[in-house]
Amino acid sequence: MVWDFEQHSFLYRMLRWAQHQEHGVFITLPSVDRVANAA
Image: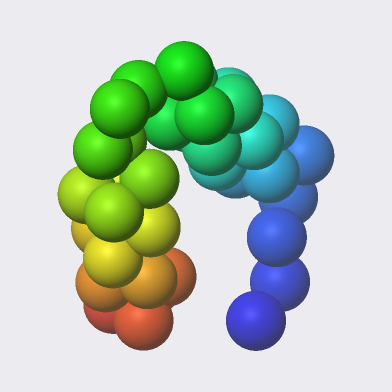
């Protein structure tokens, strides 16, 4: 799977945002996995 810079930056921002959420990580990570698998 090839990641371009924009995708990587987008996922990085999502993960950074999730770190500031009480339970965001548990919601964001599965969503990222589904998107990555679908790509």
